[in-house]
Length: 288
Image (cartoon, rainbow, N blue to C red; front, side, top):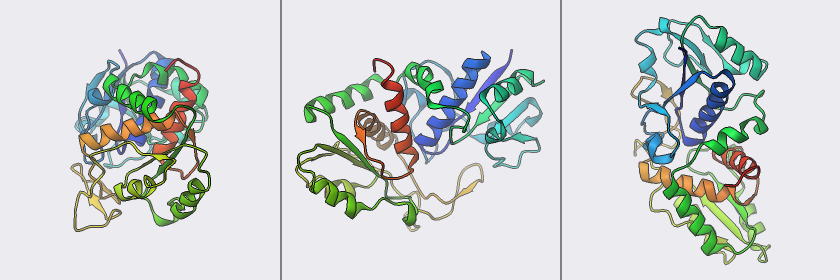
């Protein structure tokens, strides 16, 4: 029987992209999914901590597949460990039907799927049911809903301000956004950021609410910059000097869920913001 190993790595937004697009492929092909969710400095939270949906989960990094590469069909956005195997890139397929047919016709029973972005041929409307079936941890959702009830009596505008590990050219214009909120005192805003100083600054505005987090992303190597080159346990180099504790990830998901219930302001191309938009569009078609 075939198995689809959905490898989810990186920050939560990247993991979520791989997860939901992999689950859609699983749904269309009826190939049983196995979620591969490594516990790394990118995300110290277990899958079971963030989600209540039952799946078979393996907490292994990419080396897990390097022992017997001949057993696997690899569909990944990069051959990061230089496996001696052919790696098919998800973005090179032309449609969801084509990638599903490829999986079904593969002579191998173990297929590894990994993509930190949702492929261009997967429309958001295709993911609605997958996302509705993917239940976040009930305690996280309860905390987020309680916050919304206690702070917003009507519609509110969500503002996500990613700051720590973004390249400067991609960072939002914080001063301009601050002045915009200041000039619209009749509207209510929810502001969230990966930077406590940023949240503290915006929380001074009377029409802004900020969820009171106790943990934020930190630097993995204190003497480095946010975009210093880091080598992880698998030997992969990447320019993200980040450490996201379990607590910080859970609290970030509370931010994410609150954001998804707002009328969001487009502030950047952050994967976190894109995930919130994806959740909002999916939840609008359901009861969550």
